[in-house]
Image 1: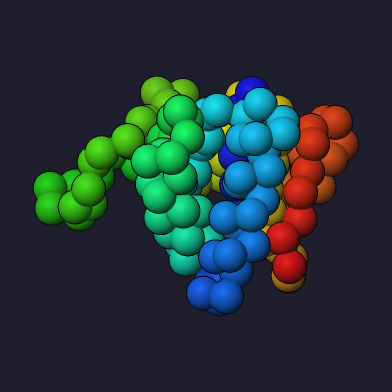
Image 2: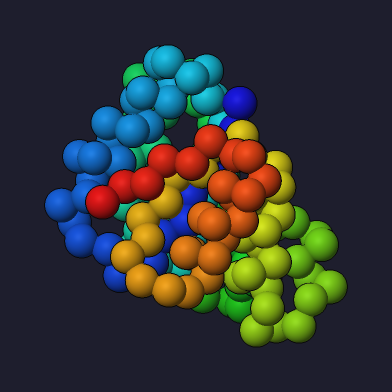
Length: 138
């Protein structure tokens, strides 16, 4: 099973224990062993940091899915990164949205931190309409 994440660029640090708890439940009780996370904000960072910690305990894989092929010295840690070639066919400003749609398409579960309108909220609503298992973190 595969899980992806949608959240706002600005996310409070206090979410980290909740993120950890949700991830452990997904791993232990829902057979999720693959995770796709973006690279464009604080929520993504919290998730990535937690996945890195949990990978030392559980046999899971996670990938940081890039929306752009980074310019030289733009991204310092390429470990666990992937890039979907389909994203490259879209206009530059639409690549984050396209990357997120592809992550959603490939996933069984979606964990979301959404407090306001925007791409994260739109994708979370789309996930619900597509019948994905959606977990909202508050």
